[in-house]
Structures are given as C-alpha cells and as structure tokens.
Amino acid sequence: MPLQRKVFPNIESLSQGFADFAATALQNTLNRKPQATLVVPGGSTPRHYLPALAKCKLPWDRITVTLSDERWVDVNDTQSNEHLVKQHLMNHLPANTRFVGLRTHHDNPFDAIEVIHQRLEKLPLPLSLTVLGLGEDGHIASLFPGMAPHLIDTHHCVAAAPPAAPSLRISLSLKLLAESEQIALVVTGESKRRLLDRVSENPDSKLPIVWLMQRTKSAVTIFETIG
Image (cartoon, rainbow, N blue to C red):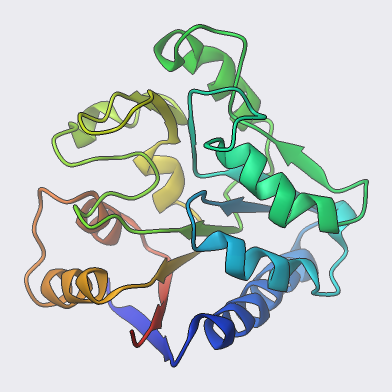
C-alpha cells in the first residue's frame, strides 16, 4: 500500500492541514451516505489537531465519533482516551453529535469483548475516516508487536495487556481498521518518521503498522512534522 506523506513545518500547520483533510473526507462520505463514522485516537498529539477539527463546519449530527482504542481506566481519569476526546473535540461540537465510547462496567477488557463488539456493530460501517497515531515500536491503536494478527479478527475489538503499560486496553480490530474508507496517520518526532522510512522501504511483518498497510485497500495519508 503506497503511503501519501504530507510534511508540515510545525504542529500548528499540521493541525490545520489535518482538519481540512478530515473535513473533506467526512463530507465526501456524507455526500454519498446519510451517516459517517469518525475514529480518533488518544495520546498527546490529538490535543493539537482535534480542536482544529472541531472548528470545521460539518453536519455533525450525521457523524458518529468513536475511539481507536481505550485504556481500561475510569472515563474521567486523565489517562482515558474518552476523557481526552471529550475535552478536546466533543465539548466543542454540537450537543447532538453522537459519541460511542469503548469502556464498559466490566472489570477487564477481556470480559467486555462481546458487549463492545455489539456496540461497534451498530456504527455506520465501514468506518468513514480512521485517525491513528504510531508508537515507536510500530504499534497502532492498541495493537502491539507480538500479538497474533489472525486472532485479532474474530470480533470488531480485541483486548490487550501491553507489557510496558500500566493498564489493560481495548482496541478496534485490525480487520475493522483496515476496512476503513480512509485512514490518516498523524506522526510527530524524528524517531517515528525514521520508522516510517524503514517500513516504507522494507516492511517488517512483525509490526502492526505493517499489518495495516498490507491489509487495507484504502488510501493511507500520513501527516508529519519536520521536527
């Protein structure tokens, strides 16, 4: 899968470029369908570009927002992706914009897979625009190296216990992500850019970002900063 890489001088220009791209992608879907689904990640970088997206004039009442993954913490915890997305996106959108979170009442995500699968099954599918970050180890969402790709496709979601992370996680499945109509990858930092250079030239089948590149038939657009 060829990657379209858009490079920006700083996070401010990246945020605006991303917002323009995302708004166009969602509007294009809504020109063809009554509803669209936007998937957004957690982490530090979305704090910059989600507010820019919130300013875009879109029929938000026709767009459902959900998460690429979630830490198994309380949704009001500062480590929660739902908390971040509500703070930087949902709170700036019309009140009738629909949000579908991934957290349940279960003690751990492994017990919640069936419930979350049914929740995701009710979304307008395929996902219209999926926005992902990239870990320095090549992980996307909460799909990490060492997980078995063939076990990730039985449901729309998969539970994960990352070895170096403080909390369990739930993630959208590789299949659901790969079937998205469009995929955007937002990458900051020199080490992650070098990782993209490497996998573009020599795809490493151990890395989840490569699993996605090899599975998807969609366009993958990468937004990067120089620094």
